[in-house]
Structures are given as structure tokens and as C-alpha cells.
Amino acid sequence: MKKRIAVLVSGGGTNLQALIDAEKEGMFGESRITLVIASKPGVYALERAKNADIPSAVLCKKDYADIAAYSRALTDTLKANSIDLVVLAGFLTIIDEQVYEAYPNAIINIHPALIPSFCGKGYYGLRVHEAALEKGVKVSGATVHFVTPECDAGPIILQKAVAVQQNDTPEALQERIMKEAEWKILPEAVKLFCEDRLTVKNNKVYIGE
Image (tube, rainbow, N blue to C red):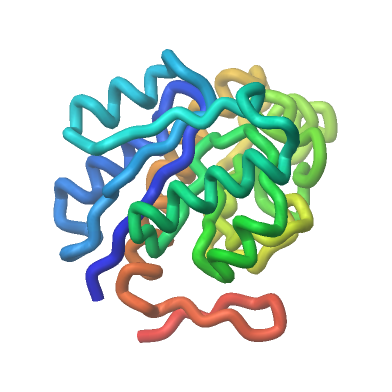
């Protein structure tokens, strides 16, 4: 079934690019990325959308009275564009239950660690990799999960492990996890969703044939 996908971004958009490339390769069948929403103007992800002829919008948190008003505007924008799947690809703005209730089991997020390690409030960007290296873990990776009101606690769709090297810096580990895990499993999760192969039962994701 053909799906309309929105990708929400806050920065450079490397995961957005991975999704754009996957779509070009036919990975999503007839499904398409039909909207990119940025949480601030001028981010490079908007250039990526423009280069791929994908319509975009900017919703700045400071333009709204509170999280509820922002979430209402976001939900209205998604609905107005008939979006079926929402992908959070480095989207760093807090949203509330209005969005989750409008899109149950239809919002997915990529997290740069193997949940339940190094996740939850405050764990984003380089902080995740700094914490992993401080702990001395030998393996890290990435997780794609459905989004629920509790931060990083939604049902896990896919995970991929990446080896940690002894001389790693947070930046080096971040780059390796993006290349070896994030850019692979995020498009794969979108593909599975578009093929209607994901079922959620008791907070667990089951992948159908």
C-alpha cells in the first residue's frame, strides 16, 4: 500500500539523505517522502529536501506559546498533508501526546545506541557516545523504535550492533554508528512499515513475512 512519509529534522539531515537515497533505489515501493519538517530555519536538511524536490516546512518552537500549541500545529501540518508515517531523524524538539495519539504506532525514531542502554532524557547527539565510551562498552549501535510519550521507551523495531574501538573518540564512534547502523536500519524500518509488515503487541514489535 502506498504511504506518504514525513521526515522531521533539526540539523544536517544525514539520516534524511539515507532515506532519500533508499527511496531513489526503489526500497519503499510506491511510498514516497512527501514532506520534510524542520524545527528551525537554515538547517542543511532543508537543502537536502530541496535538492530532492521534496516540499518542506519550518515549525520553530519559539513561534508557539508552549509545547501543546507547537504539537497542535505539527499535528495539523501532518494531517493537512495526509501523512501516514512520521520519521524523527534527528528531531530535537519535544512534542506531546497530541502527535502520538494522532499517529499511534506510526511515528518512528532512530536512536544512536542499543536501547535500553544510553537512552532517555538527556541522551542525544554526542552525549550518547560520550556516555558509552565513559562506561567502557565494547559494543554500541543504533535502534529504530516506535515513539511513545515516554522518551526512548517505545517498541523496538530494529537494532544493529557496532564494535567500539579502543582509541575511539565520541565523534569517531558517532560517525561509525551512523555509517554502519543508522543509515541501514532506518530505511529498512521504513520499508517494513510501508509493506505493512510491522505489528505491535504488548509493547513488542513483530515482523511479518
